[in-house]
Length: 170
Image 1 (tube, one colour):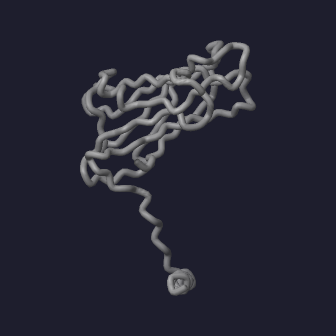
Image 2: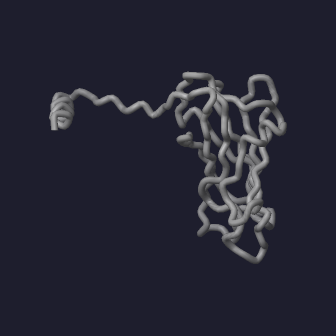
Image 3: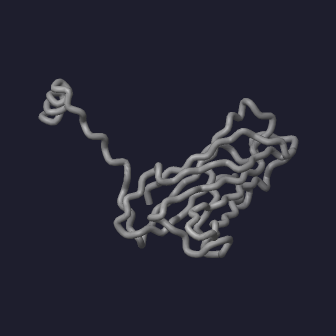
């Protein structure tokens, strides 16, 4: 009851309440898990998303072991969709240009059938990436961004999709 009274007094006096800190402290041995989601309006398309190329830009406070398409990079990325293992696959390639922090993800459905709907890559959580981090670094959701470089249905028609990244709890 006392907390409410203090908040009401602060609001009544015109004092602004501080927004809670949305970042979390990253511990090196645990790292941070970033979840990549895609979105598209299934009502406006005749077919599911069959494949997409996404670029996740990550902060300097996190890293992946290795560059390019090394096994150490690929082992840190997992697909989060598919009724059967392998239905949806995610292939990762970490940019190896000096200072670049771009992780390229190719998402593809191997269960998509031309005459069927609802068997391709669906809107929602699509991939998870396990990053290493600098001990004590503050990681916030807006430290990660995602953009779509290309996307298409099973007939190679482009689809309008978006992607986002969120930091998930371990």
